[in-house]
Every structure is written in C-alpha cells, then in structure tokens.
Amino acid sequence: MQIHAGSVCVVGSLNADLVVRTQRHPKPGETLTGGPLAIAPGGKSANQAVAAARLGAQVRLVGAVGDDAHGHLLLDALRADDVSTDHVRALPDTPTGTAVITVAADGENTIVISPGANGELRPEDIPNAAFDDAGALGLTFEVPAATVIASAQRAHAKGIPVFLNPSPFRIPEPELLAATDVLVVNEHELAQVLEAFGAPADGSWQERGTALRKATGVPALVVTLGAEGAVVIRSGPRGGDGNHGAPAVTEVPGVKVQAVDTTGCGDAVLGALLATTSGGMGLVEATEVAMQVAARAATVAGAQPSYPHVSAM
Image (cartoon, rainbow, N blue to C red):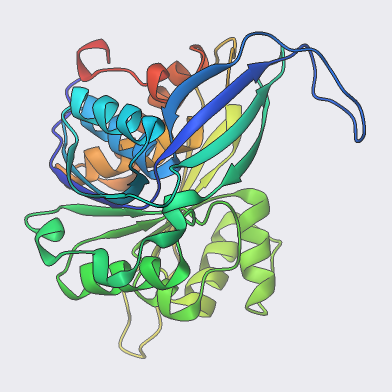
C-alpha cells in the first residue's frame, strides 16, 4: 500500500501506561491477581503522534510532562519515532500523567487516568510555530478544555483541518464544534452528541449525518464500529437556499483479526487519519487505511508498541 503522509500537529496528552494483564476484569469490590506490571509510553495524543509518524508523517506534539522518570521515558520514546518534542514542556513540580490499564484475556481493557502534567497545559503554552505547514491537527480531551478550544480555533483560522476525537468522552462545546472539520466518535458517542444538541439520535446514517451537521455545523464524521469497521459521512454541497444537500455515506468494512489487546486502537485510527489526510488522501480512503492500522494494532500488546510502520502496510 502506498501512503503519502504530510505534516501533522497534535496538541494534548502524554501518559505513562501502567499495564496489568488479567484473565478477566474484576467485579466491583473484587481483588484479582494479574501478571507483571508493564510501564509503557502512552497518552492519547502521544499515541496518535506515534501512529502518524510511523506512517511517514512529520509530526509535532504539543504537551506537558513532569521532570521525572516517566516524563523522560515518554520523551525518549517519542524522539525514537521521530516525533518532534520541541513544544513539550517539562514541569519540575508536577508528576507526569499516568494511565492505569487492565487488559483481560479477550483483549478488552479498562483505563483510569491521573492527568498530572497534562492538566497544566494552557492555551498560552501552544506556540504559533506548532501549526507551521501542518496539514491536519489532532485533538482529544485529556488536557483542559480551554486548551483544546484555543488550539482548534487557531488551526481553523489558518485553514488547517481539525480532527476531534472527544475522548475521554464529554459533550464538546459549541465553539469547539464550530472549529472542527472531522468528528471521530463511536456510535454511542454520536448518539450522546446528537441528544445533547436536541437532535434525533436514531434513523439512517444519512439522517444522523444531516442531524449532526444541522445541530453542530461539523461537516464530516467518522463513526467507528469496532471490529465492524467505520462509517464516513460527509455533508453535501451548500445549495442556493443556504442548506446543505444530503450527506454522502460510505461504510468502510473492518479487518478481521484475533485481538490480543485493543488498548490504543482508537488512537491508531485518529493517527492514521491525520497522517493520510495531511498527505492529500480523501477521507474515505484514509478511513480504509485507518481500519487496517487499528486491526494490526489489536494483534500486538500495548498501544504505541503495536502501531505498524509504513513499510509493513
């Protein structure tokens, strides 16, 4: 597969992933014995940056870590994948963010995050130089809302396509959605967004795409469906009456694999979308690539260690 990747900016989180594998997830109040503790580089935004860089993109990551062992681990890992960390601050009195992850035998995971330095990333920490020549901006919700909104608005003003994955999930602010070009959600999250804006959350994909555009103004949507693949919904052109035509709906099949660990698969999708669209690939074709990248990631333990290099695609 030939992939032409461009220049990508990612603003957001870096976490040390503390991972324990178990036969199953514990019930409330239950204690289980797991396997050895593994410490690996993670954080949604760092994961996306690595996934994009391994597909050949030039990636700048903007974020914050603590000046501690976990912070040094994360920065070293990013640099090893040629991700620029020039705009990652090292804070002396704040611990690096951490994610406590349990992975069951079927590959499903649970995650609890302690934000640490991620919670200290402010709008004023985002330099204009981070957006230079960027062909796409990736955003998630592991840093303060004001920082996410400011980043989206600044990129949007420069004509840089903004990809928003609202995870850990909360309802995105109207001003953030107004600056978003592509919303990347699962089906349940899409329903929550539509309901929050008083729009119908059921019906055909075309009807839900129309409702989202009318309610939020977001012109494009990628709905991930796990192993079943994804749906890409793009608004039709604006007519003379100011209304958009019926959206184009494309169902992208998933790639069947034997899952080992689904940790970071969602980040693999966004990273692949950033890398490929920044290089000029259309959203549907980019989503096809993203499904392959996520499937490969599910067959390898961990998040960043699981992402394929472009040479393997």
